Length: 321
Image 1 (tube, rainbow, N blue to C red):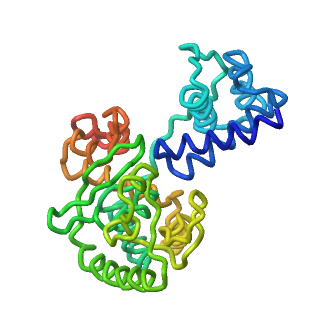
Image 2 (image 1 turned 180 degrees about the vertical axis):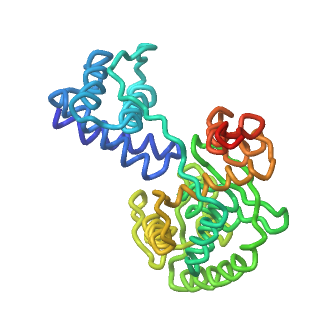
């Protein structure tokens, strides 16, 4: 198996990149396939099938006590391997012991609490917080925004390749238009300096990089929230200016929540929950909110009606009658 593993994993990386998956997905999938192979004594996946997959997934749930989302990610990695690389059909049902998915209501702040947190934040972090709250973006979608997707003329923000590899259009808060213009103005100067220094490239999905040879140097493809430094891209080996690291906005948000003395376990994703809940409070219909959030199924969006205790109309406690 030693002679097969490096080649197999290299091929896996190539296939993931060809299909336009993110570097985070690539890293996770490679990690799970390594663990799958090692768990079965370094046997090649071609020699394995349903029984080996079931025993590995059951081991994760029963012995390692992983969360349902973690087990599901491992399963997705194995499915990808067999479907897109080995080209081997798997049975319709994999009867592994599945970790239970906990049913939890999202953490939601009141409008006053939300604005208190945002007002404590400053500079870029404050603008990013308003984007997440005012447009309903996930933190990764926020830091991955490209210049061309912030559309001042059409008064909208376009989210490219969101969760499920789906594009969507969402609202553009008036509150951040002036600050964003200043951020973009400074970003353009930074990009021009990078170009003059022989850099100025940005990561593009593999298919786009092949189709548009010089697009990675164009201003429209640059990140709205660029990193403070140029670094080596792990896929191409080129020196590029990536977007800000997710940990920076996460730390800033957590710090603001603490200073605001909010006891709820709030973080970056809480802004997205607040976006949906506050729109429901304002009377917007669930289908509209579903589209703005990019949910495939309206049942996912319906969780916010439970937060409001609304099922078409407000429910009043019998103790208050």
